[in-house]
Length: 404
Image (cartoon, rainbow, N blue to C red; front, side):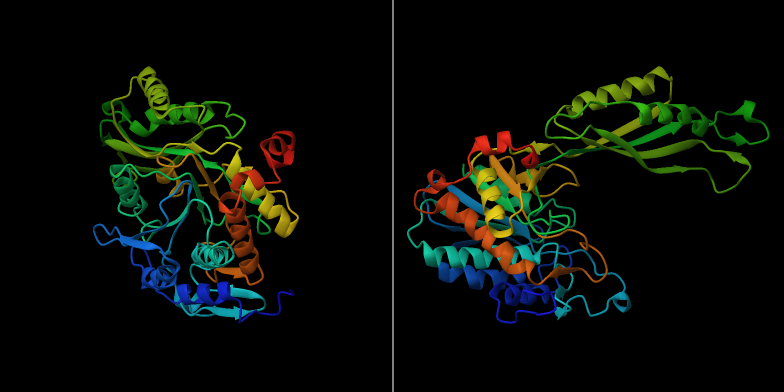
């Protein structure tokens, strides 16, 4: 299909438009979950709302047998920003020039729509499929992410329920649908460092102690430190300063303290405990008077090559001719919570170029492609014969450098 030709009858496009029309700025769902429930209930899904502290969460399951395949994602979106900057209103889904415009078009209402339509098609073709299907959806991924997917995972853990396979619909592609999928994410470890000095008149520095001067060589050393070399799946751990605060606002006062905010994005080659210990040792070598508070945002997680990765690779290649790159780059996602109950999880979604931007959009012809990819994966994992029918084996991945 040429991009100038919209497909008004395409079911994924229609559902994506309906979801975009829900004004679901995090942590609101804008009615999106009720709409999704109306599509899943006729398919035989048992619907459970696991709302917590104003955040709406949906756990929907069809079947009780193993293996359990789960689609996961979020219906909340980031604020649209200035409305006058949008070519069309962010919650008025608009198709023009072969693209669907609207907040959440890329991140990630189109993925949710594709998942639902894929499941509808799959059940119609395989009413007696093996295993079970589930959806885990939240309205708290773009916000604090403390009462969304975490609430569902905690409930499932308490019931001793686990997932066998999970696909998250985050926008993972770079230039075209399927050119990249995420098979893991780095960990995130943040610190708030406050270094004390002695305030004084700037003309008499001998009467005080300038904490900015004290911390400057420390920052240079930390920035130059190689924390690890990464590994086959992860790039090396990085350390970055995000904010520095000091001073009274006057240009003739040595400040009494300086505060530095920093973050590690760390590979599985390091542990948060090791990073904390090494950074603290550097601070102590410089004899600083400091306070340090740590926040562990996420531990790294990884799905190695196996049945799910094979199924996704084969599905993408069948639909697009592309061999997807497995990548662990980028920020965090709710996959960091799901990893606690699922051994095989991949993030597979549309092009990420316009996520969170003004005039967020997705190519209209990407919608049915994404739907068919999801449906093919279901067919390989839960269709009659399941993984035994997969044409792509672990050895294909192991011997194909482009798939790493």
